[in-house]
Length: 478
Image (cartoon, rainbow, N blue to C red; front, side, top):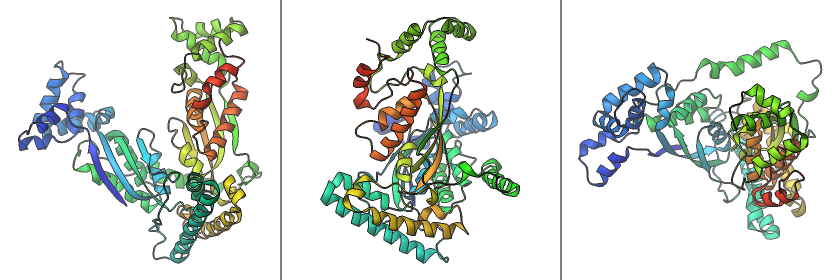
């Protein structure tokens, strides 16, 4: 594992002075902390901001004291968001990358298994290394990688290189390494370090330590509290023990893993959804209070309601979302999907994602190309061997067992998103360029939401299909 501080934001005037060959003393101000300290003073110091920045650059020690007092003393943590870090992360397993990217406010560009032919690098978890399972784990990973190479070769000959790279990865294990370029502000980074430090997996805890070490020397006043809180470190295990003590439910039903469970199940939609959005649109167009806006909606004819929704959508292009009024309506789903599909669903961080652990009992996702190429038995053999080792490891180390699984294995996820975010999901994941697995999941999600919200979801389509949907929608404006 390697974590490299690739860059961070600096004061513009300092950059200009360095470009002109500034004195060596300016090196002390090579930190984003001066920007945070200067902006923290904007609310109470009447001087122009450029003067505040100049003061902070002149006395970095005082800027750091100011940051500590304002951010951690007074609790104004948003000040730390003015400092931004770019980080190179290399040699992390797919599982560790998932843990990192669960941070909502951050930017990540990841090495794609869809476009790049991978080598044989993988992570042996510290919990397994030197133990009874290490030999079996290494043998399994070798088997996964050989299946990956075989599938890539066969699919390349039958379906072309693009399909070969995209689909062969379903044989790869979640222990395969990747890399990501990440950008986080100091506030998000500190919260991320604390969250990762509470993870039961040693690899993820090591990532927390390395992230902190990468920025500590540059911004000691902004990333300070990195120990896991009891809320993070103790609550999950305590809740599990509590439920275990209560025994199994009388009717397990929905709780039992089932490979035949529908991949997408719409659980809930905000009641009176269209009425709420229409009231919000009216509320934003004038000075009516919410109660009066609701009353006005209730007095509109069905045709007027349709026209108002259409008017709010008709100028939207393929790169835009509906107005924010659409955020008042939330759809909740339970989704069962492969690790490959989850890698794309997790990119929608403005939604709420609550994943369970990967579970072999939920079955695997088999690429259609495997059927045509006669590779389905190969994937099933690898998946069965992976599931068997997963179960053996889980008896002693349940948090580590997923390292044995493949990209084809599935997990169950609760996904809640407002309608505006569902439009974003549709734009990206229904587009013709989207990967087939996540496109199938997204199609089910959007179609189920459209059944409940036909007017609000009428233009939730991929970027390539928006204009056709606009012409064909029965509710589309002329």
